[in-house]
View 1 (cartoon, one colour):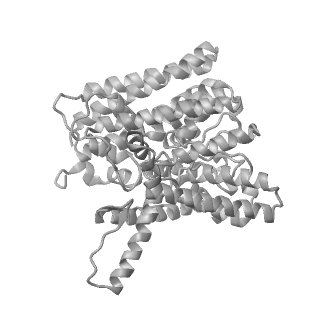
View 2: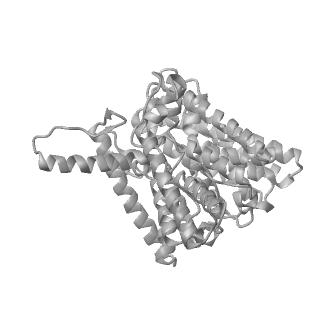
View 3: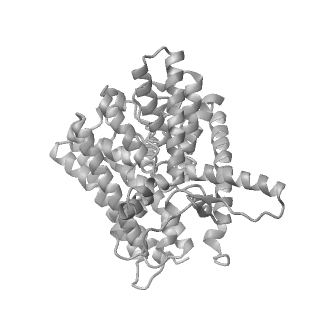
Length: 486
């Protein structure tokens, strides 16, 4: 591994992080939030210092190319470094202690949206903006956005894109990797602008509309009020948010192709059709359950079910009503959608619908091969045959998620959390949802978690956002000590 290249690109990333802190700094300075302005000024200085040190050690040359190992190192270390630098405004401003700042930053950039702040309304607007920006930059991916803005990444840039984008398939819409990144970023920005304008038309202030638009399209879920969406009690806003959360759960690569070839591409996408079918069934079941068990009127039940199915299936985690009080059947369906998540290539977390489709089709193929031993067939998705290594990769990822869910739950039970709450927190964290049921339910925060569990939650957020194997590769001694296998 060429450490010079890794250090050079990490230096650019820290500079990018410092630039991202300029808008909150300007807001703090103009609003006379002196503690916030000083905290962001210190944060920007630390980013510049990190950039100087990294560039002094490394640097890029014109013909440099990024190998697969360097791509993994840049992605994993980049996320870790940015998340650590991102905690400085919370800690330096005196708003949170170090561990809570660490957790809030990791939650923001990973798109989990789980907060440790019991009263976000006492925070200055500059910190609220930084929370939303951390969600937004982490949603599409720090490195993908950075790649869209960088002029040169080398022919090995595909390795970085593969290491950060989510899902079992990595579709290329254009021959050049940087063009792919620019197209994804363009769609991402466009949806954010349209979403913000829609929220403004629904009655939100410009500041609230921009913040909620960023966290909606990023499916992060950070809000500027303690009750997030329930604070507004606005039916038009809830349906509008539900729409954009579902849109953000679709593959952004699919939207790029649809922009070039027509909207018909969206409906032909098997994964997105399956996702829409799942959330439709879940919304109907939850609505009927709320009508029968909680005696809600039809309009209220439909409104609540549509919003929360969209919120939890997209792993955004916005809250419009206290879904922790829902009947057991409704909770079960909401947790199921939370675990599945959105589509591959979206900003949503979770297992991804594409993997579920591949696993079910793979099981069906195995059954057919048992009945017909000479059968030669392949698993298909959206009418295209899928390579065996991608199918096996989906199975391996499913196994890894289940194992890590159980492991994190065991860690929390060891730390004094009861079984049900431990399972809920584990699924919610690994799926990058944020709120769940019980100790970190709709009206609760992660502040109730013991210190050790908070620290472990950061690690599992990191694993989840980079889809496990990138982080596990970084933790392998052979990754750093030997080049024989690369």
